[in-house]
Amino acid sequence: MNYVSTRGRAPQLGFTEAMMTGLARDGGLYVPAAVPQMPPAAIAALSGLSYEEVALRVMRPFLGDAFTEAELAEAITTAYAGFAHPARAPLKQLAPGHFLLELFHGPTLAFKDFAMQLIGRLMQAALQRSGRRITIIGATSGDTGSAAIEAFRGLPNVDVFILFPEGRISEVQRRQMTTPAEANVHAIALKGDFDACQARVKDMFNDFAFRDAVGLTAVNSINWARVLAQTVYYFSAAVALGAPHRPVAFTVPTGNFGDIYAGSIARSMGLPIERLVIATNQNDILHRTLAAGEHRLEPVSPSISPSMDIQVSSNFERALFDALNREGAAVAALMGDLKTAGGFELPQGTLQALRAVYASGRASEEETAATIARTHATTGELLCPHSAVGVCVAEAHLGAVPMVTLATAHPAKFPDAVVASTGIRPALPPHMADLHARPERMTHLPDDLGTLEDFVRERIAA
Ligand SMILES: *Cc1c(COP(=O)(O)O)cnc(C)c1O
Image (cartoon, rainbow, N blue to C red; front, side, top):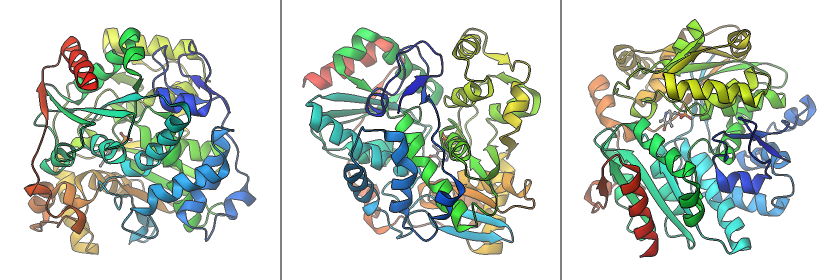
């Protein structure tokens, strides 16, 4: 199984190399050279299996001979053993035809744990084999960082550096990153927004001398292995609701487009997904793109759903690659325009191709708050603000097929928004009850590439 870059000018890689690299050397993202197909009978056979067994069957064909079936099964089992719900990704019914897929029962209370816990295990296995050491660098709007730190803390041969936008994440998110005591964990509060964090990480990857010297590895949602791990819960949910015999639709609270792109991979494999609805907050570049055919950056406007406060939505490049009939040169040209001119018009036919798979909607701050209050009043369910953006947009897209909205984080991770809407302060689960008493450790750094690279080199040498 080979992986190709969305910009068409990087070498093809196998699964392990694509996972250990993250970003392709031409600036593009790795995607499978061909998406393996899952025939209806194979999808039907997933019915009644455990989440772990579904994961093994869905992911196996993408790995080629990178890991044996036993190694993959072992990684999957240990990755999800720490989840607080036996179904791992339980479905709850909100209303007739509308379901909530709870993806927040992992150790850091957001869906990012599904992928990060697994790639932590897979990378560890690959490093043990090769004897290499790596430096993981990631930018986070809050949840990727804590999930990465949780997955890699204390591992030999790995250092983890996480850049987060100072003052723009919730206190629980920050404390999850700044309280682990292991020496290989380095939390960096950057003076800038999430897009600045993400841009500096990309700059470090494009500094090939630095990249090779420190063994840079990206575990941001651009990492193919993360996308792959997230395709699994689309299968488990759809099969529970009648796939392959009945189609389903999904609404996905979206920022960097990794989670919803995983849905499109499930769809390409043969899962009958009628529509994937992109739900955005007031940072609505993706909704504007789908509505008007123009992808244009605007300043980030902080919201009560901070993990979606993004304009540069990295994985959208993968959707463009598909919509542009996999022409890397065309993708590279558009990405060039995005960087130099702040946006681009979708070429002829591209908008139609995107609309064949995706729909979109936007929830304002008021609508998000009202959705938290209304959903609690009618169902008793407390939604985190990101999940509420999803539910709000999904309610405008209900149709003949069942709708599944992804609940991307636990309400206790964003207690202020929940209290403001319902008067209820959601409690942290027991394993985190003393989070506010643990000592914090972080480094404040300016938005400057040279300073960041020096810091990484010094810490690794130490
Ligand atoms: C990361 C995140 C999102 C956005 O997911 P993408 O894959 O970046 O689109 C939404 N909600 C929460 C809680 C998140 O942590």
